[in-house]
Length: 410
Ligand code: RNT
Ligand code: ZN
Image 1 (cartoon, helix red, strand yellow):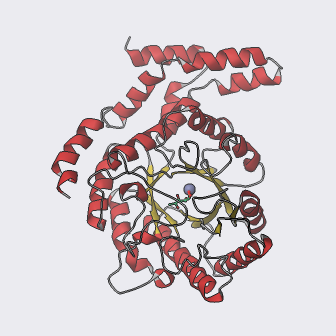
Image 2: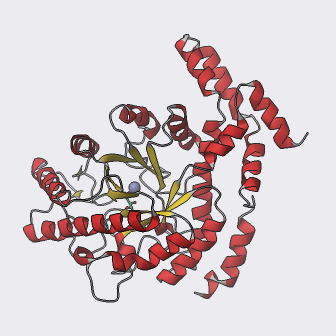
């Protein structure tokens, strides 16, 4: 018996169908953020990163042109198993006609559509409300300046049109996520006004017609950012209430909560009130540091909540992290594989049995069995998955080779 066959038997004895798990895993899309490849800079303005988010590190070889970013993505994607989508930010527009964020059009993303089609992927999208001169005093959609708000409303509307174009071209619905960095470093005198203006701006953005079967608009909350420590306009309560009331999809980034709060616990709560929910999977280390996602406990818990609540088709899973201190392709592949490993791990749990034990009040057995599952031969099943997907377990050799041939020459 091979190691995989032995694993199938062992999991089978626990009532887990390994073949079914492998089959399910390969059809779960993970939306890969393009911004790991260039430290969240983009191509439209090349301004320094703003909005209270930061990349640290200066590892050689970062992509600085669309061609470089696409080449890096092409290599990284080839090392990731499973179904993928590509998640773009508006700042990755390829502009040769002077268009600004309030006037970008589908044509500025034609090359990305071509890239997505060549990789048989859908596209997701994000308006970019940071790293731009029209961010005034750190504010965008909540600014007291009418002109600033109007500019960013137009940006949001332009992005909806681009999102619909992505869906039309790829045949895959597009998730368009709105996140704004607006907030205050120190205690504000008015906490209601900025939120009222943000609400009004969102109403205006959403007043243009779009096909809700093609574009899912998500709203991402946040607790604080660097330089925006005291007050965040798009707080959890604001975004959740707005989403639920207006038919948007709430998005939770697991770096955007207080350190002892966990998104895994919030998933089932939201699933009871929203048809779809969305996630940014990241790894916060002491703050919203956006470290590369690992196969760690909370990532596994997040995956478990999706899988055991039968919500794989209701949760949009996207990655969101940026590390500039290590090889960026390796960061991409490690993070995305970690998400996929967590999903496989969740699919390999005896979920029905564990639920029954809990309902019978047998928490002792829940603990013992959950612990036992941690040392089940997960690795052998993962290795088989990679083999069936035609992807090598060792991605570092390929990436190091690419680093020597391509990245160091930049
Ligand atoms: C910032 C949010 C947001 C960004 C991306 C680049 O804290 O997480 O999602 O990371 O839009
Ligand atoms: Zn995020």
